[in-house]
Every structure is written in C-alpha cells, then in structure tokens.
Image (cartoon, rainbow over all chains, first blue to last red; front, side, top):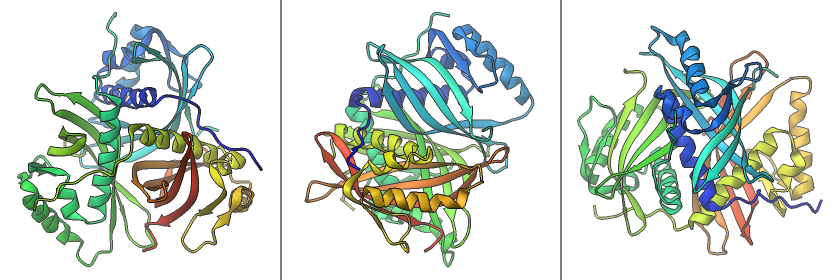
Length: 146
Length: 146
Length: 146
C-alpha cells in the first residue's frame, strides 16, 4: 500500500473562520435567535433538518420552519444544545466548500440530566465571500434512521 | 430580511490560540494539576463555577477552591473530563475577548459507563498578552438550573 | 505563585492542519474506509487501540487489525462515531508533535438512542511533512480501566 492520505487543501484562515462561524451560528439557534440563525444562510439558502423533510428555502422560510418546529416545546422549558465535532471540508469546483460535521443534540430540562440524542451528520455547502462564511445549503442526516 | 450574519472579527491566529489554550487548560484541570490550571488565569483572575457560588479570586484562591471542591471525590476513583465545543469569541472594547463555550462534564468510574452531566456554558473573559492567552474571569452557568 | 501558563508553541497553521486532519481521519474510520484510515499513518505507523493490545504495525497491519476488530459488528447494523475534543499539542525534540486528545465513542443502532462510551484519551505522535500531517503512532487509553 503506497497511498498517502492528504487532508483536502483548505487554508488555515478558512478552516478557522468556518469553526468560528459554526460556534456563533449554533449558539444563535440554541438561544432561539431564529433570525440570526437564518442570517447565517445565503439569501436563497436551504435548510433540511432531515432527509424526509421538505427543505426550507430563503431566510424567511428558514425562520418560519424553525418557529413551526419549536412549537413542540411550547410550555416545555427545554434547553437544547447542538454539539459539533470533526469539521471536514472539501473544496468544490465552484469555489464553495462541502462541509461534513458530526452533531449531537443535547437536551436538558430543569433538574434533569442531559439527554444526548439524536446523533446526526450535518452536510453543508458553505460560501465564503470576502472572508464572511455563509451556509448555502444544509442537510442533516440521522444515524438512527439508516 | 436583508440582514447578513457576520462572525465577530477575530484573527485566525487568535482563534487558534484560544482553542489550543483551552485544550491544555482543561487537561490540566482534569489531571488535577490545580496549580497549572490556576496559572492559566491572570494574577487577579476570578473563577466562579456556578452562579450561586462566591467567585474564587487570585491564583492561590482558585487552587484553594479546587482543593476544597475535590474533597467530595476523596476515596472515589473518579476521572472527570470537561468537553468543550463552539468557542464563540467577541472582542471587547478594552482589547479582551468575551468567550462563550458549551461544556459537558464526563464522569467515569472504574468499570462504569461515562455519566455525561451537567451541561454548562462557560462565560470567560480572556486576555491575550504577547500571544499568550490568560483567563481574566470565568463564570459557569448550568442548563439544569434555569 | 508567580508561574504563568504558556500553551506549548505551535503555529496557527500547524494547529489548524492537525484539527482538519483528525476530522477527515476519523470520518474515514467511522465510514469503515479502513485503507483511507491506514493511509493517515506513516508507512511504519503503529496503532494500539488499548494498552493491553499488541500494536498493529504498518498500514497493511492496521487495515488487518480493523477488519478483525469489526467482525464483532457482523450482522449488527451499528454506526459508530468517534468524538474528539481538546487537541493538546506539544512539540518534540525530533520535530514531531505529541498530541493528547479526549475521545468519546458514540454508538447508534437503528431506532435506538446513542450509547456514549467508552471515554478515552488518544495519545498520538504526529509528523508534519511539507504541510501534510501523518500519525506515526497512536495509543488509546480508556478511562474505565484505571
């Protein structure tokens, strides 16, 4: 075996920006700042929280989808946290970045222990424009459904 | 909606240094090297492990607090690990950095399964002096108590 | 106490490359692309998945070890994910990097909740050659066995 592994070539600057972008993006989501979360997508961005779901389209569409989704927590004082690890980037021919990231959803209720489920993989296409990262599309797959 | 999200402007160099700093800082804590952990704080640093607690002040005070806290594990062969994700930095007017980070405490006993609790958020103020990161203050909030 | 903590001196470029390397390396492992995983080791690399195990040596030996290990999952539709946090690097005199990283193994079966165990620490020696990261040796210790 003579193959040698080479991590796809992404500059340090881009890798770091993507990490920091995700930190703020997901803290916005978990703080229920849905407009801030939607603003991390391109104007025509798409967000598909599971393969069966119809993708939400445009920032306004993403906000509407999140408002609808979170109705299940009405009257339920839940704190959710989306954990990420292993951000693997692959440059695409059009200059965008394919980003594949592991995600765990941590859910906590007052006085309770964290429930850590589901285990997901986030499949993003990211654009970088003048140093600013935006999500063009996001598809979330679920390890429990395979 | 025309708002576009911009991650707060932090250089690649600073973001990477903060990540690496946290790795060594928290491995020091989990290895019970309390003096090394305290040395990651400024001389007058403060450490408040929950909103109800009185903050420990100065490096000597932080060591004393940790020694006291860990007495509950005397005779209990526990290994704790503090997991971090989503380091979100925001530069402050005085040149410091506000850092908001998700944390999960993983606790393991011989032969057992990891207990993963509590889910916390670390609120730090960091100083960077000649490339060296130090914690000026740390407040840890707990998702179970809201 | 006048000691001040200094994170070991590693360039931003190196730290970022190591993070990105781990993301692709571990996604290869969890996707059962064993040859790709083995290719992230040096030609004479060693991989020891627990202190009791004999280390697997060379890329071919690592592939053989992984094939053997995964026989336990034959007919068991399991998805495993190796989570990493706190990558702490320390430059070695020979130019390599000692890397100490926390790891949690997340295991999911169809319709089930993730099982999050064991809690491990990965002890790597990494080589960087013309910007390409490779693992020279890996020893994994387990928190449950101490």
